[in-house]
Length: 324
Image (cartoon, rainbow, N blue to C red; front, side, top):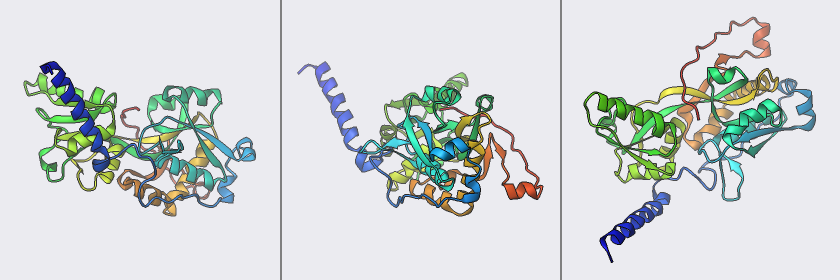
């Protein structure tokens, strides 16, 4: 066999070996819900249900467009059902309002236009709540997200996302970490006369995480919920390096001015207050990404009773955010 053929065979074998280790290391694209998961559909709250638009209340369903896979937010199980932590949360909020939330698979770029056209009630696809998007849509912020890095346990002190020149970092192809964050940092290293970051680009989040576990990469960069979930699934073979940065909330998208947005926000607020919200996040390993207050377009909301008491509502300032 020629050297070139041997090289191709070796590369193929290496890829096969990496793929075969995924189940033993970390699986972000799951075939089912995580260990400890339980379906959580709260009872209807009659008072909050009055906030639902009559047209939607009469049919009892809400169409929620999403784009899979984006574990742990949304992905398909072995039977083709759309599951994930975002699906759990949006369905629980719908149940509080007496509604059955029905996810619909859709190309990510078509979701917001479909909301504008009225062919879909809402979007539940890890949308980053940004000022630009707020011009035409309202967002009920349900989870904090940003960028985070993971490494092998015990190596956290050697990995600094803000001082990574010369390091080898694994990323998933086409993600913000690939196209902007790690590449931008590497370019800055070169400008300063320092060694560039060696970026290992993988087709899936699974492969990037596994490469880090196997020490082919010193660190793995991705969205913070994806990193948190990878750590959860790694059986102690991954640890977060530093805090998440470029943090901004994920929000459910609604047509601008839709009364369904404040209704879902009120339902989410109840889920947080009674502990259901944390109960849903915990099996996914996302407790650290929890929002402490419910906001619409990054502004705090008040319940009916709070408004009657003239409670002062303080608005938060929108910050920069990456966008899926």
